[in-house]
Length: 241
Image (tube, rainbow, N blue to C red; front, side, top):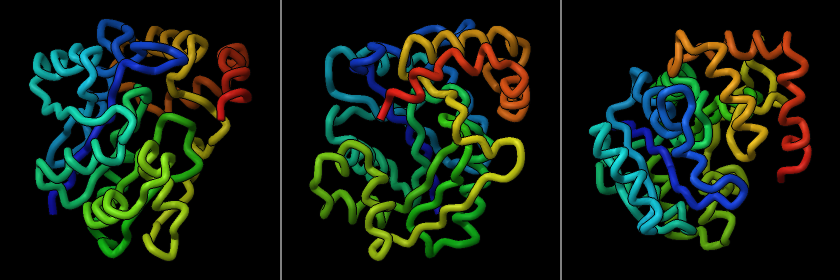
C-alpha cells in the first residue's frame, strides 16, 4: 500500500498573492510545509502539485532545488490536479495538505495513515476539531478516482473533499475528534491574510530554535496564554467563509 502526501500549491491567491513563497524565518512558507510533511514517517512519497500557470514557475523551481517531486495541472480543477498526480506516481492512498498551513502536524499525518492501514475499508479519514491549519486528511485512490469521474460541481472540483463529506452513503468516512489541548477548532493557524502572516511570523520568531519542526502542542499552549496574539486574526476568522 503506497501512501503519498500531496501538497497543493499556487501563487494566485486573491487575498494574499504569492503567500506560499513569503518568508517564515529563513525559509519560504512552502519550504516549511514541505519539511513538516517530509517529517512524517508513514508517507512513501511527497509531491507538490502546482498549476501550469506561468506565475507558478517559481514553485516548480523551488521544488527542483529541494529535490522534491512536482506535478503541474489545472489551477481551478484541483480535483483533477490531485487525481493526475496520484495516478502518475501510483498512489493507493493520499494525504492532502494545503500549502497555506505552515504548522501542519506530521504526527497527525502519521496517525491518520496508521488508522488507514488498520481500517482500510474507509474511503476518507479526518482528525477533526484541531486548530485551523494543523490537521490533514486522507482519501483512497479508489475514492479519488470515483470523485474525479463523477463529481462535476464547481465546489467538488475546487475543494475535493466536499464530495466525501457530502455523499456519506457513497464514501465511507472515519471522522474522529481530536482530544485534549489540541481540541481547539476556534484557533486559527493558517495563512489567508496579512493578519495571519503577522501571527505566524511572530510564532516562528518565538519558536525559532525549533523551526521549522515546531511542536504544535507547544504553539497551542503558548497561544492560550497570549490573548493579544490570539486577537491578531480574530477579524479574519469571523469574516472568511
